Image 1 (cartoon, helix red, strand yellow):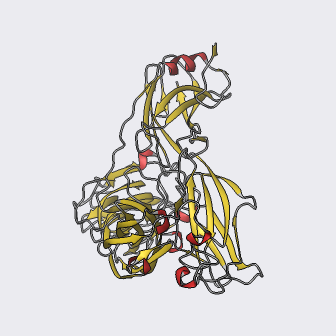
Image 2 (cartoon, helix red, strand yellow):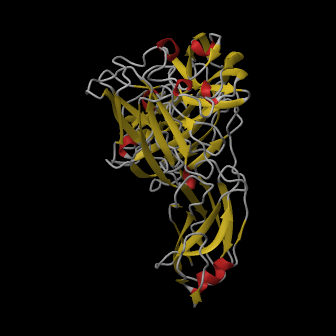
Image 3 (cartoon, one colour):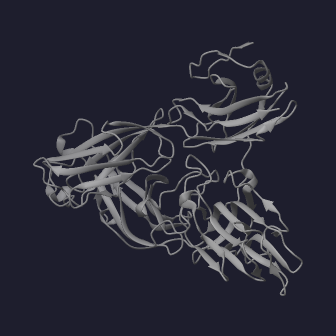
Amino acid sequence: MDLSIEGEGRGHKHGHWSARLATAILAGTACLLAAPSFAAANSYHDFLCRVPYGPHAGQPAQADDVAYEINNDYLYVGNSCPEGGALYAQMDGGLTHPYTARAMDTFTAPAGLSIAGFTVWRYEAAGPSQVDGTAESKLEYIPGPPSVEGLCEQGCARGTQAEPLNPKNEVSVTKLSGVTQIRWNAACGGGPNGTCPESGSGTLSAQFDLYAADIDLVDNTPPTVSNVGGPLIAGGTLTGMQAVSFNAADGQSGVYGGSLVVDGHTVVSQILDTNGGACLSLGVTSDGQRSFEHAQPCKSSLSAGLTLNTSQLTAGQHSLELIVDDAAGNQTIAYNGTINTAGPPSPGSSSDAQIGPGSSLTVRGALNGVNASDEATLSAHWTRTSKAALTSRYGVRERVTGRLTTTAGQPISGALIDVYATPGYQGAQARLSDAGLRTGTNGQWTLTLPPDASSCVLRFAYRSHVNDTITAASTTLDLNVHAGLTLHITPHTASVGRKIYFNGTLHGTPIPPGGKQLVLEASSGGEWVQFDTVRTDARGRYHASYRFKYRGPVTYRFRVFSAHEADFPYLDGTSNGVTVHEH
């Protein structure tokens, strides 16, 4: 049977496919559903051992604030996650163990934080036991009930070791209050007079292996901000680039970002210090909360500044707010007042309407950097290619490096580099995205883009004086990013008359109004054939189902395709493939 499928913006060829699969899939229906979430307000996600979602799913994550404890010989605890293992607690089965022998791992929330909920992916097992000595494993939270699950004892096992992130390994707990610890262990229980018997040389009589954890940490304390100052709020009529400086502190999740809000609209927003990359949100959860690989991802204190191009504002008075937020999203309004601006230069005015070379030094302000010069050279290049345009995958933290020198080759250090980003969707405007980028002692600088960066044009500009509106040097790079999608299907086996269910997420923003159209594709060993379309919700989530109508056995591969569209700033992208066996 020939199945002709119309391509959705991809120019796909008509495909020839299995008659059973083609007929069955054309009967499928799709609908949008909201994914459940356990995130609390003013919270963020901390991943342990592995990243459980998104394009980095399965990659090792840090294990901050996990403590390991044993109270007898031949008990094992530790972290083998970097080698593809687990945060493990195990009891050797090669000898007997006394009652209360225990191997235990404990995650403790940093001071000032609590746990609102968590999901773990684990394998647990317990070997043979006797009346007074019971090998057992369990998961619990503190303070709380004795255990989240019933004890795994009397030879039981839960989960699978072959696939760490398999849904069979998943345990979720929600709506917690005041919880500060999560604990998992392998132990000898039963009664005071018992011992846990040997289960054989080279075996484990009890074990709890935690392959990944998603912990929702609550931070109810906003950052504190002091020493707010600078020319932006000093008064007078403002022209050109003007800066505000401040100190910020947050002893819980850490200081994350700063924003300038003019007349109710955010015009500058940036991460104040990436903390070596730890303070960059992974952006892989669907609840709007940030996600990190560290329990305390951002610096507890820092000095920072934000710069506003006042020449982009109309002449007159404007309201101004300086807002500082922490990793959990708590905000502090550090300044709330008004500023007066001269407005943009008039069309046809003389060059003196712009501030730069030839303007009065009193108007141009302080020098921008050591060895600042109107005759400057600014370079920028991707670390992965020498070309000006880079094509990347969603979720990759691309890096840009560059150098600022005078035309004679002398380095300009300590200089502010303005970074403007124009997202790759129709009608997008350039935005000052990172005004905190400064050159080092040799004039070099490095910028690490966030993992959820979209396709965009990046313009790097240097002004030799802080109030200049005319740049002394600039350069441009192009970033093209393929759309990032995830696909989950349950179950992985089916038979005639049974349904399989699709769900997943299209990552990245902005999602077009009404959602982004995706195409479902399938293959039974040949080329991929499009068989249905589905539209995401406003957060990029989608859901669909399909019922088999003919008998197997046949093995199929399914995936989801996102075509490039003018209102979504990503190239074509394809999800992971999922295998389904029809009996």
